[in-house]
Length: 263
Image (cartoon, rainbow, N blue to C red; front, side, top):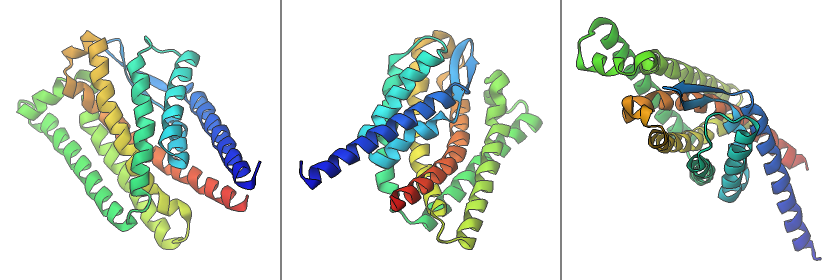
């Protein structure tokens, strides 16, 4: 076996081992997740397992990202089943891994300053929308906006304080990221956060939209809520999770880079 073949074999083995490790971590973390139900049907999962199931996509590309997403979903369900098994959700988990890898290949070399300006605008819009909805519900109860929000029932908080919370947390992390980049310009985590935030976020939002449609098809009772009112709380939760998960993923990628450099 020549040197190139040995190197390829070693690289493949390393990728498989690390992918399996991340899948195992994703399954373990998923065991501590919380499922929020809508009308007795599984609505959205609050979990940090997505950090680990998406890391192979960031490190090794679409193939490993898709494999990790699919296996983590199936094994996670076997370990901790919640509701009926829906194969289409496994397919969207695979899609999420592939899409994350593809978006990472686009954004990993993007201008950090431009990304930061875009994210500032995004979180300000999110916060302003939440504040507008809150004012409408509190002070203009009979307005069209307030009546629409109230149709969400006990989940209307996602459309008001939920959006505000997402904006506040996002802006706080943006401020911390900006301060860290100014004080420690060479720190790797500072250059990775925003570049990981977009692949995690966009892929997560796409999968959430598709999964919402699938859940409504599988659980007709959810149609009573309506696609939009069922979707929005799930999007708010996804945005909140992606903001935090991306920071942790940036830290993991920084550690991985340092270990890889030393080895």
